[in-house]
Figure 1 (tube, rainbow, N blue to C red):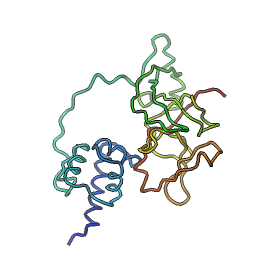
Figure 2 (figure 1 turned 180 degrees about the vertical axis):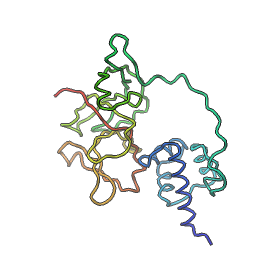
Figure 3 (figure 1 turned 90 degrees about the vertical axis):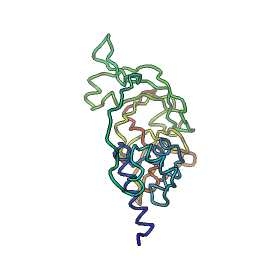
Length: 245
């Protein structure tokens, strides 16, 4: 007789395989999947951790969100996906990079209205393109930064002082979504919105989301266990900041 634990483990394995096929990393998988399937992040976290399995309606929503066959996702029957058909290209998507006509030695990066909280929360429910910020093309090349993956946002708050001040301009590399000990990242939390914090590997298990501000009574650490990392999505690594000294 097949045990329920074995059924759940097999389902989790297929769910993670489908997420990987979509290019969705483990960090923040629950948050992304919840948005895609229109379910709660807590439910996705339980499914990814093998604590429970979705019912029929939610299983169908997961399969649709991940473009996989529901029979495969639920029972492991047949192939993961139906035959792939070509998708039309959406030409309405704005370019992620610009070559500045007046000076080819500079490249423009999208400047967004989004704010990364270094203090109070920012949910950035509506983000618009504010303009273009110019960077030296040679500097981008020297630092191996691809403008297709770059965005400019703004810091808001005091928790990352003295490293980052409120109002500072932040360059985010959205290709760098793997956690690195001691590096600063823009993160998306279901409970806190968009935040900018330093990630520190815990001596025990999981990660610490840390503020640089020495006032730990006000800006304390948040500890994430390895089971909780799918609830916080890494948007990208902060690779440059500009502001007053």
